[in-house]
Image (cartoon, rainbow over all chains, first blue to last red; front, side):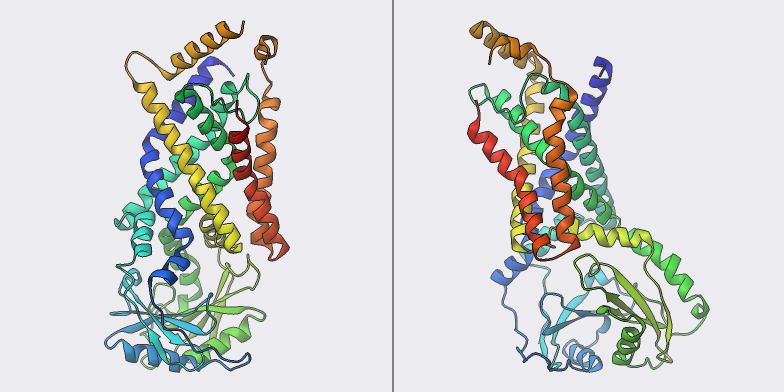
Length: 384
Length: 63
């Protein structure tokens, strides 16, 4: 590589890092507890347990589940009916003030999946994990906050890639994994930075970029609404919303018949962001680690109870679905979560040592490069 | 390490071959738990633990 090209890559590495590092440090620190959010919530908050029933006990009628949830939350309407992935004995009903209220403000009501008894509807907004999640996903600043963090994520990816390029010249005379612990701190921390950085390249790129994709989730949903969903429900555009919606249970049954071999994930009620104003959208999923992330909607006419259409999601929604587990690290049990946490801590080390190296560089009258040169000269004098 | 070895500059291949191996193993580790359960999860744990373990080994070895 020519000295000019190297200078250019160093410039990219320096400035992409300088701009994103503080935000990346915040993301890594808030992301750490989020890896274990289920465990932390379980530890900090009491939860009414659903009845444990013998295997084969039939599930409660879904209409009863919804009625039971709404009875506990007077004045609210059901947006989504969700099968709890982690607890087959519980159903979740997401309720809002009106059908077009922002679902980000919804309350989740837990209902026993077999008896349809109301369990609880905790206000999660004061929880530690909720605050971490809001900081991590949009810094309490809504969509602009999300998109801003996405931009920081793109800069982070640029920093990782340019970091790989500038890694080469600094390793010309060193073996892989060199850590010179007998040298001044600036040299030791440069080694720590280079070593963790190069070992984590793939993980940081994947977690960084899938994080960026997640910041686009709202836009992806809008694209789907105005694209495929609008197309599937075109003939309903001018119809009034159903005055007496058909049974939710019947809609789920029709959807299950239309998508053999798939399991229900959630049902979006007519008029919510995941459906048209005339349909129940029953989202079905597969049963392997990958296919369980891929949702396929079956649209059920809420006036007639008949299937209108069922299609696979377009590629950009699939990309979002696949990117989620790769960002969260929640797809390989507790050992994977622990490894995710360790890799996150190593990323914090890369960021922290990076800041230190940059600050050293900025000291007037001496540069880290010159320090290195001086140190090398001293070493050469000693060894020759 | 003698001065003669120090002066010899490593090629790009020599610099990047081990990082490339780690990156490829990480990629397989990231994907395997996504594609299957059981043994695939186990493979993922082992492969993704490699960067963490190497960091510890190199720091412990040092010098």
